[in-house]
Length: 453
View 1 (cartoon, rainbow, N blue to C red):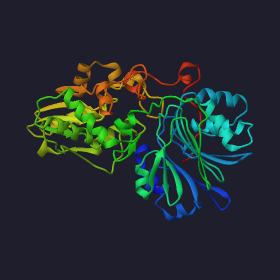
View 2 (cartoon, helix red, strand yellow):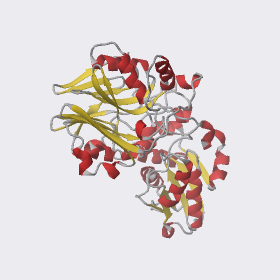
View 3 (cartoon, one colour):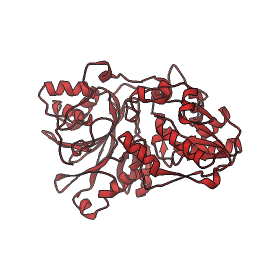
View 4 (cartoon, rainbow, N blue to C red):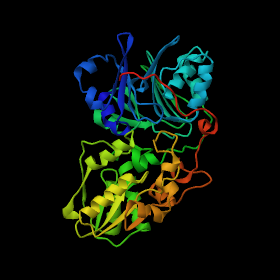
């Protein structure tokens, strides 16, 4: 379990937790910080006995980063103990929470995942799996869920399949995880993707599949391919690395400047920059060297930490920059603050020209499904024209991959505007589910008593 969480560290760096079941009881270890900071300690692992466990890396989109929000969350119900871990974001969690509290529920965290535990607890169905399905019928938004009971491992994926969930197997034991790279690290084999709207129940007898929702066309989140997933993972049958290279190929076809060298913004821009170089014939060079002991700036929680992270994270490789016309290739542009510093770094290293290329369309809308993009007024592309963005980051030219170019990289001729193949609201504003909490009067900020972490 700890090794799998380590492989998925890119999905959340704020905290990690594991709940296991062994010796006829549940055991929990939850810590703020990175997986390796805590779960490499043999004494911690020894406190997690048992043959079954679930774990989670926290990447906060709902709730503060304190210990009581760290998953998996656990509750003792009349049907037995239940631990739940959740990747995604519920778009009606605040509305449900308000109703639950009014009915007498006592909430101990500000995580949207706690709502699921309360819904399971309130169900009057006798079997835990039926209670779990009842809870799923109440929630909206995006979720890949894993739950642990005394004798079952349960997995569930939202009806549109926005967030990923896959099934693996190792020595006859089944595994649920977000990405195939977690299977690779432990030597497990990939079995299949959990389908959209599917619930799987894993026991000693094997895997049972339930389909409690009416069939819908799958719309997985395209941002998994653009940024979030690890490049060595396979998502929905597609190599993330190969797709990102194709994004670079399409980008070069759409907006190729005269230049001497292609420079990726490491690490997320590397595959697209390789594709851009191969399609354009312009040499690829590592013009920026990354310090790999500093975490991702995008998913760290505060702007101050992000800005400090940029200075610690990248350094110009002057020998490949000085006197040259360079094309900087990155995966995406959100606030633009990192891009400003990268462009300035290139100029300070003696670049003759700096052309910036983004391997996805402009991000013009906030995400409410588990990617922590900021409010829309803080998204650079939502408030600036292309020329204003170019001036802001200080580049000689700026271009983004088109929406149809992104879909071509995914293997389609174009986006089907009537039945979109992916969840792509960040670029199009086309949200595929209700956004109940946004449309109501429910307060966005929840209170929680301060405590020592």
